Length: 318
Image: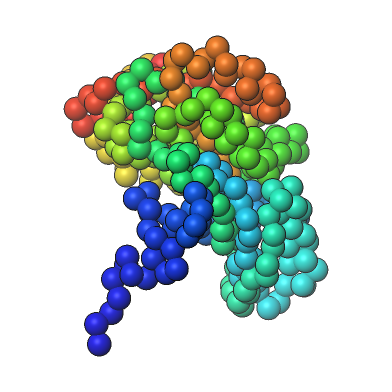
């Protein structure tokens, strides 16, 4: 028996768009889908649920889509009280309501470690799909959330995170990227990606590679979650920082005058981070107004898109 091709499987009742999304028959919209889940990075179950849900929704927003429905994905140990699971799911449901996304059910399995996330289905205008592959030389790079969630979660694991620092990081991670996506659409962003496990540099390198450009990032302009810079100075970054740096290898150019803690924050894994967008310099005048309208306060212009520079995809300058 001959197995169906990927295209035959994906076509279903619709048609496969060039961007890899499913075009809805008789409509100018497409279906987009994503899935993400992970173990707790904060102690409070409801906060963990909020963060995991916001993180799962982020890919839909990064494409310029609108979440439509979601399914819970749960791993839960038999020895833990189910009240903890109830709190996790309640936190996730809270974000579903905020996103106006219908929660249709889900699936759970017994696991040695708690895990939670969502499989999300969304819709998107076929003519306004945002990708990470169309950045242009001269574009300005904007980041919509502060960095440092990796440092805070590492400090929490070592019982070295102050309550106010943890609260700031939790609030950031639980914030949906819906408003940031509306800004990207309003400013006709050329390229957009969300910043998660591969860190700012890793996801930035993906954007640079897909666009055949080099991203030049100014370390001193990076937005940082309150208190996280001090943690990074104490070398409290996650193992993701080293893994991401090793993965980038010769695609990363790190200037000698960049402080080690800022380089660590740029390389470290993020959880439910902000959107990195490349916008035309002509739209800078509209940036402040757009961010203010959407009540996004922790954004920053962090660099510029440059023509390709040898093997380098990311350059970090002091």
